[in-house]
Length: 352
Ligand code: ZN
Ligand code: ZN
Image 1 (cartoon, rainbow, N blue to C red):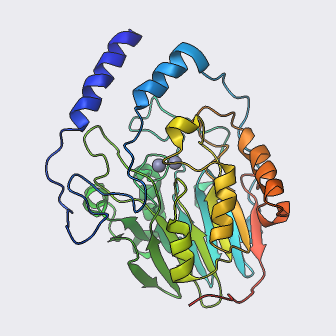
Image 2: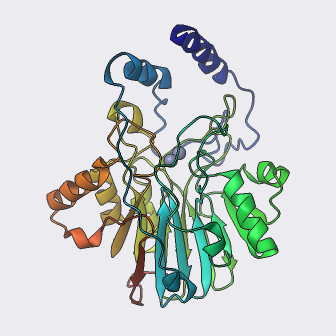
């Protein structure tokens, strides 16, 4: 049975390599390649997922983890009357960012599973730290890329149902048509460095090192990246999913120092497979430093099992990485799911 599945996946992997001309190809724009979007700095071919699955099946298949990140119920008072920049972790990469009267959600994958099907695929550890009806009215949803643990169509539809035309969905280039066909109305798509003003805030789509696919034949047909959310005095950076690259120095050069950076710390193991697309905690700390972030908050851990490290390992590794870099743990504190952080209103030093 396993062998037959392996054979089927092998044939599919071969077929993926045989795609036609890419619709966004532009010889003058380096990241719009002939067969799909490209990274700025490292386009080493992705290692074979089959090799990883084979290794898991035959040798290192990890035991089930007992628990994900701790959960506390969201203190609704904090998010109903936010005082200053207020950020609440809803699990995985979903953060509620409240800034200047605006409510922004990052990659709200709030379903039970993050998968093309409802009966299989990574399942949420524990519960959501709040009921969806308790979210404040959402003005903007930013999406980093199309992977199921980041762009969860069911969650997006629920957010639209609750808020109607109020919610705008800002998504990477290549996703608009698909999301509109799914019934989302206010969708705008962005190439790297394109921006949009929504109410009081400016949103800039920034490069990252990653890849995309939702099916077997659409690898890198939609773009990936992060978002800088700029207010009048502060800016919050949401990294999405990324490997380490010079992109973060570029982001600092163009957009200035970051007040709060939301940086992934999980899904890094095994390194030989994950390194190109997912940072480890040493690299998360390097990104914190590259961005000259005053504060970073960890995301992308403790919620869905996507990789081989234990679900509870990333915070321990983060502590070690901060100690190695001679940084206090308070610059990159580990949150519980449901926890809210309020940041003092301090002006940006190097912002535009
Ligand atoms: Zn991803
Ligand atoms: Zn992810």
